[in-house]
Length: 325
Ligand code: ATP
Image 1 (cartoon, rainbow, N blue to C red):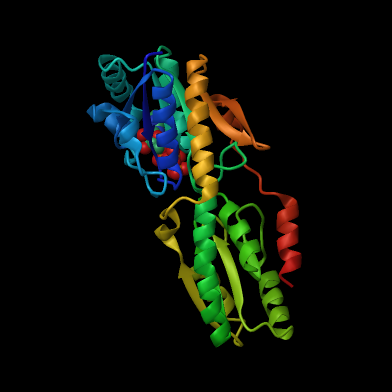
Image 2: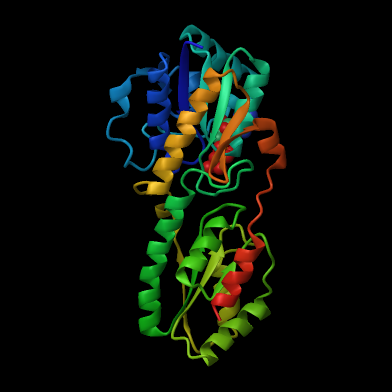
């Protein structure tokens, strides 16, 4: 391997920049050349790439988003698109790519690598959703959870002042990982998760019990993937049966993706980027680097994609319910 490339793809996540920095500097330390590809797979097809040096990644550790930009790219799903990408990589003398993204990004990477096995591919789990097999944590999850906590703490202040019940919808796609951890951290009265069913009757009973126990406010966190149909629908249903609280809804939305990465995500991004390049130098391909039990672990992309199911911890769900009484 003489020259590698790095790209970010799918949804952006805080921690991608520290990871890019680690990839670039680890490659250069090992005598490799490194190119940055802009806008994910779209940049591969458009030949939108540039040579990077150690200074290209100065002062980016603290930046949210991704300096390489990211995109969702339909043409990369076609054989023609992949062929163009391959020709562009060959023309630039690139023989390995580090792709930072989620499961869609890995699906594309694996398909590409099977068609063109002479280009090594290593994936880094970068998504706030924390929904990938093979890594206990994904890049961006910790920062996003902290952002959510900060927002909910502020909502709690106003909820408390007015005896209000807030339904707060948080991101995570089909995963309730952010909702669960934010719920524990903010003492939410209830957490609705795609991983389990919560009967509305049961929720209402709990909220009534809270009022009986003299709670001055209630926070219900609703994961966006929950089957209840979203925070607005849920609030409407509850409004019919609860009159003692003024009911409000907040959808936190895209603010959850932004912000300077936490210490955890800076270190995770650095470790995963460093490990990705070292794995590639050692001949690995079609692998994902992850962190399990605080150790770097390589998982084949195929396994990461087929195992897919990411389970929430039962003990955390049970504890959250008990501690919010
Ligand atoms: P996030 O979890 O944050 O959304 P992601 O990586 O899952 O991140 P996607 O939009 O699903 O985000 O995928 C990113 C890109 O990967 C797509 O825009 C597309 O270019 C490529 N991709 C996804 N699936 C395939 C596929 N089956 N074949 C080829 N490329 C794919």
